[in-house]
Image (cartoon, rainbow, N blue to C red; front, side):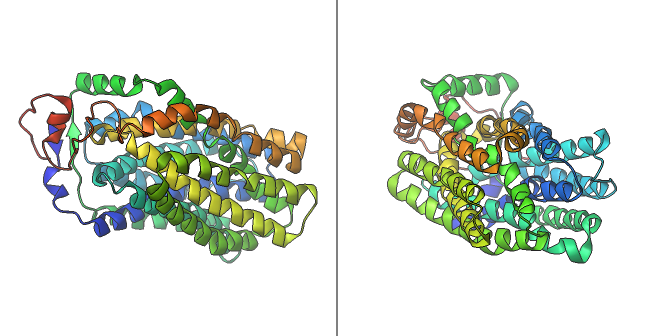
Length: 435
């Protein structure tokens, strides 16, 4: 077993941890904001049909299948090196995107978008593993407040904030600016503190992963993870086209997304993290899941009764606040059940499971065209129900003393940079080398 960067974990204060978690999750959120919010407006304004915009969701396949190459992140290199390489790749892909005609998307353009998501997914693996490695037991609530807040701020700023620049710069320069932002983020990653990485032989990694996925109740818990954000994944790619079809300009979309959305998402995430710490992960999950779902009914009401702009803004505010609340609780649950030394692989599996529902979003354009916006939004609310069927099994997992998965013994702290990994597995560590 090789332990990389052990000395880097020396006495990292909670304040420093939270600062870097905030920065890294801002980096992680930007690509999703671009893909979910910027590109639908970009293509819709260029005359691309709702059906084609919906089908572009299938290009997000790497976000759902990242578990298949996540073991490489556990097996080789540092977490921050992977983040750096992914940022550099996205610089080139953003510059390439500016050269295409958006009115006639072709296979080459789709390939560029696919590679952009691939780089983003690899970055996600490394950042999630970094966060799990640096956060100590008992710090999950406050850490996930910062994770959720800054991730959602990045999604909103990267998406809605970009709308402010469309008129003065034009669409081609938008992608050049985004490339410059990724350059700045890559440089920032160089200064982040190191966290320990336990490089286990492939056989040990496979054995530990099997213990994780075969725990009692694992199938039900994995189905919960798969369905918990089903409604959000289905509705996401149609919200901005709905705004465009209601006559909103990019500047107006940017205003509602950045000025109101970013603040409310941050407030929701902070409050969600605090409530998760106070009431526990299980109670936070089911209650905040409802807060995530109800904005679909608000959008349905706006569409059905053709309500004015203030009501549309109100629905957007509910959406942003609800997503912030729910994300903090959900991330705390995922973080709690993962082993630190196999965080990249296990967390990638869990996030890939709920990411699979993005492919349902690929049919959202077809559903919106056939049902109309009002019925479509009402349907998305009903999609929150399946996850609640699996709460009894989730409760058992949460109540097992914070057992984060296979290989963890309650009461044995997997302290960063220590030899407790050997205590956890019961194996004798090999001589460690520091890379």
